[in-house]
Image (cartoon, rainbow, N blue to C red):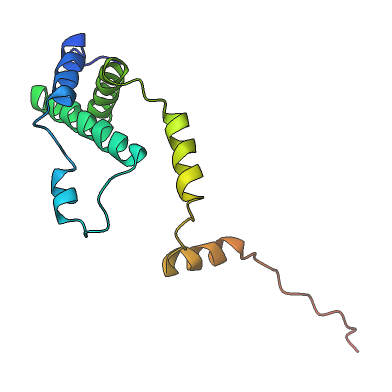
Length: 139
């Protein structure tokens, strides 16, 4: 895959700088508006917020550098940059964070399917049946 924009280590460095910038606090507004009994985020929630922030920075920079790149190419550049930056920024292990979160909060129930989803599941289970031929004798 060839990119007009070189996804160089410079982009990962800029993403890491954004992640390390103490003034960039993506959860501040959510925390400010949260009810009184919600006074902290789990480690997983905070880490996902930071990673998403880094991905957004990388995506925006890649898009600004070459507005004509297909979105899939921008996404690939952003993912590579945030992965590189994240390895230098954090020693968090995603598997351990998810396991810790599940141990603390329990399993996450899946959302029930929407009415359209339920209808499509039923459509997917339907089978065409040929009409039975009448078996009889012509007199």
